[in-house]
Length: 120
Image (cartoon, rainbow, N blue to C red):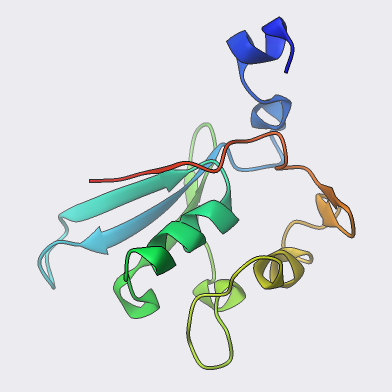
């Protein structure tokens, strides 16, 4: 990675057609609007983190976060037919249509982003 990219961050973060980051919200108390928030630059990394930490799909709301707004993600895009979290590369295949032109065979517009996930 060159010096400019280290300072400015991943190029894909400046593509306004892509979410800036992804968020999972998990209620702390059922029925309350206080959440634990988990953030990742890549949806696949966020889902992987949730899966590895035993956070079940039925507990989570997923969001695409753009610079000025956030939008819910259809959780079904991230789940197996049995209702479990999808893993790579299956999640990539599932999201191809949702991110048309950004995820294709051998090409992913999110490749320049990190795999980290932060949360409580």
